[in-house]
Amino acid sequence: MAALKALKGLPLSAVSRIVRHARILSAPGPRGSGPGGRMDVLGLSIRLLLLLAVANMAPIGATWLLGSRWSHPLDGGCRFVDGRPLLGPSKTWRGLAAAVLGCTVAAPLMGLPASAGAALGLLAMAGDAASSFAKRRLGIASGGRATGLDQVPEALLPLLALRP
Image (cartoon, rainbow, N blue to C red; front, top):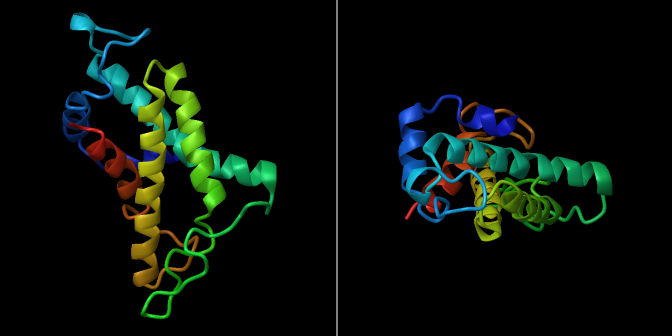
């Protein structure tokens, strides 16, 4: 659900362009191969959106399953020079691991390489951490909303980085 919200404001042509150039993901696969042995753009777009959803839901699922176990913050509780938290307490190693592992497992089920799933999960969480960093600099508390800033980095970073 969060992944769909992340791309809500983006023009479809921008997403299509990014996906069209993602050669690492458009190699022939066991399922969903289109003409010329390449996945069609729509099919690949749907798979990427589903992987973004997995990356966003996996940390929530891990919290539900594990409670407070392994909930060490990514920033180690450090503060930036402005005195505010670097990322905040909600960005944890458990969430990062859950997103990477979840996408690594889900990608082959969608006919994509596991390595692409791992990269997408890692980059989605890097984008999420970058938006948290920006929100802390703007004085927005952990868990506070910032429309656009909450969604765009975690959706665009993986899509841009996975293109050739």
